[in-house]
Length: 260
Ligand SMILES: [Zn+2]
Ligand SMILES: [Zn+2]
Image: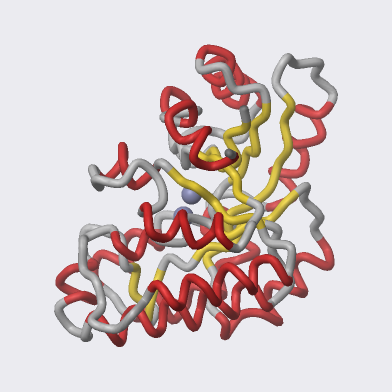
Protein backbone atom coordinates (compact mmCIF):
# COMPACT_ATOMS: atom_id res chain seq x y z
CA UNK A 1 0.00 0.00 0.00
CA UNK A 2 1.20 3.49 -0.82
CA UNK A 3 0.77 6.73 1.09
CA UNK A 4 1.52 9.23 -1.65
CA UNK A 5 1.48 12.55 0.25
CA UNK A 6 3.20 12.93 3.62
CA UNK A 7 4.52 16.28 4.93
CA UNK A 8 7.73 17.00 6.81
CA UNK A 9 6.09 20.33 7.72
CA UNK A 10 6.12 20.14 11.52
CA UNK A 11 9.68 18.87 11.94
CA UNK A 12 13.29 19.50 10.96
CA UNK A 13 14.81 18.43 7.65
CA UNK A 14 16.77 15.52 9.07
CA UNK A 15 17.02 11.78 8.67
CA UNK A 16 15.77 11.01 12.19
CA UNK A 17 12.51 12.81 11.47
CA UNK A 18 12.02 10.98 8.16
CA UNK A 19 12.54 7.69 10.02
CA UNK A 20 9.64 8.53 12.36
CA UNK A 21 7.37 8.49 9.28
CA UNK A 22 8.91 5.24 8.11
CA UNK A 23 8.21 3.61 11.52
CA UNK A 24 4.59 4.73 11.41
CA UNK A 25 4.24 3.52 7.81
CA UNK A 26 5.39 0.06 8.94
CA UNK A 27 2.85 0.13 11.80
CA UNK A 28 0.06 0.85 9.32
CA UNK A 29 1.12 -1.69 6.69
CA UNK A 30 2.36 0.93 4.20
CA UNK A 31 5.32 -0.13 2.06
CA UNK A 32 5.72 2.95 -0.11
CA UNK A 33 5.87 6.62 0.93
CA UNK A 34 5.98 9.79 -1.13
CA UNK A 35 7.51 12.36 1.21
CA UNK A 36 7.09 16.04 0.44
CA UNK A 37 6.62 19.47 1.86
CA UNK A 38 4.81 22.66 0.86
CA UNK A 39 6.48 25.09 -1.49
CA UNK A 40 6.05 27.73 1.23
CA UNK A 41 8.69 26.05 3.38
CA UNK A 42 11.40 27.02 0.88
CA UNK A 43 12.91 30.47 0.24
CA UNK A 44 13.12 29.89 -3.51
CA UNK A 45 9.31 30.15 -3.70
CA UNK A 46 8.82 33.23 -1.51
CA UNK A 47 8.32 35.69 -4.38
CA UNK A 48 5.36 33.61 -5.55
CA UNK A 49 3.43 34.43 -2.34
CA UNK A 50 3.75 38.24 -2.45
CA UNK A 51 0.18 38.74 -3.69
CA UNK A 52 -1.16 36.46 -0.98
CA UNK A 53 0.81 38.37 1.67
CA UNK A 54 -0.63 41.64 0.40
CA UNK A 55 -4.04 40.35 1.42
CA UNK A 56 -2.84 41.02 4.97
CA UNK A 57 -4.37 39.77 8.23
CA UNK A 58 -3.87 36.21 9.38
CA UNK A 59 -2.89 35.07 5.92
CA UNK A 60 0.12 37.41 5.96
CA UNK A 61 1.02 36.40 9.53
CA UNK A 62 0.98 32.75 8.52
CA UNK A 63 3.16 33.29 5.44
CA UNK A 64 5.57 35.59 7.30
CA UNK A 65 6.54 32.63 9.47
CA UNK A 66 7.56 30.32 6.67
CA UNK A 67 10.23 29.97 3.92
CA UNK A 68 12.61 28.63 6.57
CA UNK A 69 14.73 26.28 4.45
CA UNK A 70 16.41 26.18 1.06
CA UNK A 71 15.81 23.57 -1.62
CA UNK A 72 19.49 22.59 -1.40
CA UNK A 73 19.04 21.70 2.28
CA UNK A 74 16.12 19.49 1.30
CA UNK A 75 18.05 17.88 -1.58
CA UNK A 76 20.86 17.13 0.89
CA UNK A 77 18.43 15.29 3.13
CA UNK A 78 17.05 13.37 0.14
CA UNK A 79 20.56 12.22 -0.81
CA UNK A 80 21.16 11.03 2.74
CA UNK A 81 17.87 9.14 2.92
CA UNK A 82 18.39 7.44 -0.42
CA UNK A 83 21.52 5.78 0.94
CA UNK A 84 19.52 4.03 3.66
CA UNK A 85 18.34 0.48 3.30
CA UNK A 86 14.73 0.60 4.50
CA UNK A 87 11.75 -1.75 4.39
CA UNK A 88 9.62 1.11 2.99
CA UNK A 89 10.26 2.51 -0.47
CA UNK A 90 10.78 6.28 -0.26
CA UNK A 91 10.51 8.96 -2.90
CA UNK A 92 10.75 12.71 -2.36
CA UNK A 93 9.01 15.69 -3.87
CA UNK A 94 7.09 18.88 -3.19
CA UNK A 95 3.51 20.00 -2.87
CA UNK A 96 3.41 23.25 -4.81
CA UNK A 97 0.71 25.88 -4.26
CA UNK A 98 -0.49 26.49 -7.78
CA UNK A 99 -1.53 29.83 -9.23
CA UNK A 100 -1.49 30.22 -13.01
CA UNK A 101 0.27 33.60 -12.80
CA UNK A 102 3.42 31.78 -11.69
CA UNK A 103 3.80 29.02 -14.28
CA UNK A 104 6.97 30.52 -15.78
CA UNK A 105 8.37 31.19 -12.32
CA UNK A 106 7.86 27.53 -11.40
CA UNK A 107 9.31 26.29 -14.69
CA UNK A 108 12.52 28.14 -13.95
CA UNK A 109 12.82 26.58 -10.50
CA UNK A 110 12.13 23.05 -11.74
CA UNK A 111 14.69 23.41 -14.52
CA UNK A 112 17.28 23.80 -11.77
CA UNK A 113 15.99 21.54 -9.02
CA UNK A 114 14.89 17.97 -9.67
CA UNK A 115 12.60 15.79 -7.58
CA UNK A 116 11.12 12.30 -7.87
CA UNK A 117 7.62 13.75 -8.21
CA UNK A 118 5.74 17.04 -7.97
CA UNK A 119 2.25 17.47 -6.56
CA UNK A 120 0.37 20.57 -7.65
CA UNK A 121 -2.45 21.81 -5.43
CA UNK A 122 -4.85 24.72 -5.63
CA UNK A 123 -4.93 26.06 -2.06
CA UNK A 124 -6.22 29.55 -2.75
CA UNK A 125 -8.79 31.25 -4.90
CA UNK A 126 -8.42 34.97 -5.78
CA UNK A 127 -5.20 34.78 -3.72
CA UNK A 128 -7.06 33.87 -0.54
CA UNK A 129 -6.71 30.44 1.06
CA UNK A 130 -10.05 28.61 0.87
CA UNK A 131 -9.38 26.11 3.68
CA UNK A 132 -7.95 28.11 6.57
CA UNK A 133 -9.27 29.64 9.78
CA UNK A 134 -9.76 33.03 8.08
CA UNK A 135 -11.25 31.65 4.84
CA UNK A 136 -14.94 31.86 5.74
CA UNK A 137 -14.77 35.58 6.57
CA UNK A 138 -12.21 36.55 3.95
CA UNK A 139 -13.30 34.41 1.01
CA UNK A 140 -16.57 32.48 1.34
CA UNK A 141 -18.55 35.44 2.70
CA UNK A 142 -17.03 37.95 0.28
CA UNK A 143 -17.44 36.12 -3.02
CA UNK A 144 -20.29 34.02 -4.35
CA UNK A 145 -19.83 30.25 -4.07
CA UNK A 146 -20.28 29.93 -7.84
CA UNK A 147 -17.51 32.45 -8.53
CA UNK A 148 -15.18 30.62 -6.13
CA UNK A 149 -15.86 27.25 -7.73
CA UNK A 150 -15.43 28.61 -11.28
CA UNK A 151 -12.05 30.05 -10.37
CA UNK A 152 -11.07 26.86 -8.53
CA UNK A 153 -11.73 24.75 -11.61
CA UNK A 154 -10.00 27.25 -13.90
CA UNK A 155 -6.89 27.00 -11.71
CA UNK A 156 -7.13 23.20 -11.46
CA UNK A 157 -7.35 22.81 -15.25
CA UNK A 158 -4.41 25.09 -15.79
CA UNK A 159 -2.42 23.22 -13.09
CA UNK A 160 -2.82 20.01 -15.06
CA UNK A 161 -2.23 21.63 -18.45
CA UNK A 162 0.96 23.33 -17.22
CA UNK A 163 2.71 19.96 -17.58
CA UNK A 164 4.68 20.67 -14.39
CA UNK A 165 3.07 18.08 -12.13
CA UNK A 166 2.77 14.29 -11.80
CA UNK A 167 -0.06 14.45 -9.30
CA UNK A 168 -2.93 16.77 -8.40
CA UNK A 169 -3.42 17.30 -4.66
CA UNK A 170 -6.82 16.71 -3.02
CA UNK A 171 -8.91 17.67 -6.09
CA UNK A 172 -12.13 18.18 -4.14
CA UNK A 173 -11.09 19.86 -0.87
CA UNK A 174 -12.87 22.98 -2.06
CA UNK A 175 -15.85 21.22 -0.39
CA UNK A 176 -14.10 21.64 2.98
CA UNK A 177 -16.66 24.00 4.57
CA UNK A 178 -19.56 22.35 2.76
CA UNK A 179 -20.29 25.22 0.40
CA UNK A 180 -21.51 23.86 -2.93
CA UNK A 181 -22.22 25.84 -6.12
CA UNK A 182 -25.58 26.17 -7.86
CA UNK A 183 -24.28 24.92 -11.23
CA UNK A 184 -23.55 21.32 -12.25
CA UNK A 185 -20.00 21.23 -10.91
CA UNK A 186 -19.68 17.47 -11.44
CA UNK A 187 -19.40 18.13 -15.18
CA UNK A 188 -16.22 20.06 -14.35
CA UNK A 189 -14.79 16.94 -12.71
CA UNK A 190 -15.39 15.11 -15.97
CA UNK A 191 -13.23 17.67 -17.73
CA UNK A 192 -10.64 17.50 -14.93
CA UNK A 193 -10.53 13.72 -15.30
CA UNK A 194 -9.96 13.79 -19.05
CA UNK A 195 -7.25 16.46 -18.70
CA UNK A 196 -5.52 14.41 -15.99
CA UNK A 197 -5.47 11.43 -18.34
CA UNK A 198 -4.20 13.48 -21.26
CA UNK A 199 -1.33 14.93 -19.20
CA UNK A 200 -0.57 11.75 -17.19
CA UNK A 201 -1.37 13.34 -13.87
CA UNK A 202 -2.33 11.09 -10.94
CA UNK A 203 -5.44 12.03 -9.02
CA UNK A 204 -5.32 11.86 -5.23
CA UNK A 205 -7.80 10.13 -3.01
CA UNK A 206 -6.83 12.13 0.08
CA UNK A 207 -8.05 11.29 3.59
CA UNK A 208 -6.74 14.54 5.16
CA UNK A 209 -10.07 16.35 4.99
CA UNK A 210 -11.68 13.55 6.99
CA UNK A 211 -9.40 13.28 10.00
CA UNK A 212 -7.76 16.74 9.96
CA UNK A 213 -10.91 18.80 9.32
CA UNK A 214 -13.73 16.44 10.28
CA UNK A 215 -15.32 16.40 6.84
CA UNK A 216 -17.81 13.56 6.41
CA UNK A 217 -16.11 12.10 3.31
CA UNK A 218 -13.29 9.65 3.95
CA UNK A 219 -11.43 10.84 0.85
CA UNK A 220 -13.06 11.96 -2.38
CA UNK A 221 -16.82 12.56 -2.47
CA UNK A 222 -18.55 9.47 -3.82
CA UNK A 223 -19.80 11.25 -6.96
CA UNK A 224 -16.35 12.65 -7.74
CA UNK A 225 -14.68 9.28 -7.16
CA UNK A 226 -17.16 7.67 -9.57
CA UNK A 227 -16.26 10.20 -12.26
CA UNK A 228 -12.54 9.48 -11.89
CA UNK A 229 -13.23 5.75 -12.06
CA UNK A 230 -15.46 6.05 -15.08
CA UNK A 231 -12.67 7.94 -16.85
CA UNK A 232 -10.09 5.33 -15.76
CA UNK A 233 -7.92 7.97 -14.11
CA UNK A 234 -4.74 6.86 -12.41
CA UNK A 235 -5.48 7.33 -8.72
CA UNK A 236 -3.26 7.37 -5.65
CA UNK A 237 -4.10 6.85 -1.97
CA UNK A 238 -2.73 9.57 0.32
CA UNK A 239 -3.09 10.66 3.94
CA UNK A 240 -1.72 14.22 3.75
CA UNK A 241 -0.13 13.53 7.15
CA UNK A 242 1.47 16.62 8.70
CA UNK A 243 2.99 14.71 11.64
CA UNK A 244 4.48 11.18 11.84
CA UNK A 245 1.60 9.67 13.83
CA UNK A 246 -0.83 10.51 10.99
CA UNK A 247 1.27 8.79 8.33
CA UNK A 248 -0.88 6.17 6.58
CA UNK A 249 -4.09 7.35 8.26
CA UNK A 250 -7.19 5.64 6.79
CA UNK A 251 -5.26 4.40 3.73
CA UNK A 252 -6.48 0.88 4.47
CA UNK A 253 -10.08 2.14 4.50
CA UNK A 254 -9.88 3.86 1.13
CA UNK A 255 -7.56 1.37 -0.55
CA UNK A 256 -10.24 -0.69 -2.16
CA UNK A 257 -12.28 2.21 -3.48
CA UNK A 258 -9.13 3.84 -4.87
CA UNK A 259 -7.71 0.89 -6.76
CA UNK A 260 -10.47 -1.65 -7.42
ZN1 LIG B 1 -2.61 20.63 0.06
ZN1 LIG C 1 -0.59 18.38 1.65
